[in-house]
Length: 586
Image 1: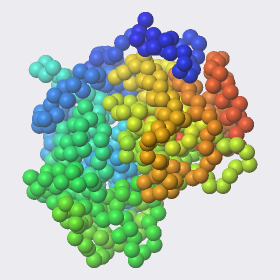
Image 2 (image 1 turned 120 degrees about the horizontal axis):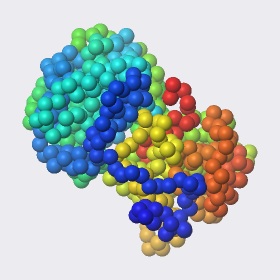
Image 3 (image 1 turned 60 degrees about the vertical axis):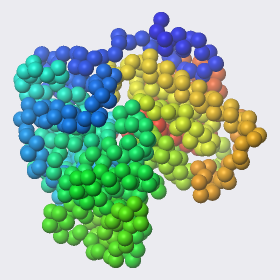
Image 4 (image 1 turned 180 degrees about the vertical axis):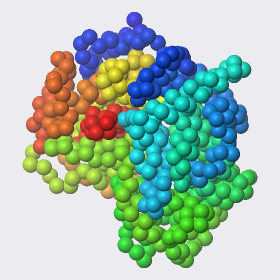
């Protein structure tokens, strides 16, 4: 019996819900390029994605990355070899006019803002990001739209066969890993499409990230920094800042948002070492002075930091490419933070305003209103981003009282080396009535959904992790129910450092928690058939077998309003969106 299954059977006090007949045993973790590609692959999109999934890596490859993190040049040399085998040279990438963005929190949103601003000028844009939410082709976009399944399939097989044909046996790794392959594919797509510019989001890190093969970006940006991916980037924010600053290039302007003193000093040192001009972005309020307030397409106060960075990146690109309409300069002020010069303070143009207003970036501070249910979707997965998520959730909740009971539900999962207990503690003040945990699996079997297959973990592992999440939540609930008499009092709601919600009667009971085997089952229980879009023919027989699930179902059916926060993982949010918005799968 596997370790995870023994835990499942030995933990009757955990409210876990698994349909009868579902087993957690799998054939084992896949090795790097373990499954051979089809000898005569079909030209269907799903065939391409299934073959791409054979390039997913396991812990052995990540260990290799950790060993080489002190030598980013080794990573870049490997990428150069793959690039050459694909038919390109590093010099070819100079044609792409790349905006390169890294960071811990908000780099994807910054890229989305930047791309939309420049597209509003009539420019043809390319956009490379990760991860995807529903379909892998979302990672490569032209003019804001994911490339079509046909386009993806054509480029995939062309690149895949070219790499297969150029194997020489001298390298222990004959094919690039998943993210490297998609990075190579993005370069080919953008060059063939002859885009005016390409916005590229760094994967993990910066110094050794495969996107850092770009030697002449037009401008670089660093969004908010925090603790994440510590096993790869280091266990302090200063070490992480050193990695992020690895994208700086000699003579190429770079911009960053206000950071803590330590990482800001590291970024400045990295920039000075290679003569990279680094500027600190002024607050968005400074750009709004003398004009109407800026409207952002993405909700949440934290998006203002991403928007101000995007404005600087877009304006710098326009200026360096001798484009008109870059915004009238205002009086500039010197920066007192770490002796970094302040970026220009200017009046945003109409194109810039329209771009910020029209930015769409699903899965980030997104709200879906469906009858009595309101879904709040945010892929926050670090401490700082979860704090921002809680503030956004608090502000987004309706202030008026419903004519009947309201129910708040948390749907959560976390992956990798993140500390789920710390993230869950930040979510406790939201006063959830139910906490629901499930893996990032849309259905129990992902055989028919290649876009969301993950061969880096087993089903045993992800279910065991969900049970651990539930244990953390139960422990936090117990601590909240019997507070330490010697601890300092909690801050007042509404205080400057408070994450507490608007006044709500205190709970007379602890938060009930459940674990489901997949996202679909979790949504079926939460929605109780009341979401007009998410409708299933029938629920699994055992979905209400647990007493908490059974009693909770009645509460959810009778509630006047159900508010559901989905957070902790972008992959979880993607799986939820796939079910709640079927158009994203078309």
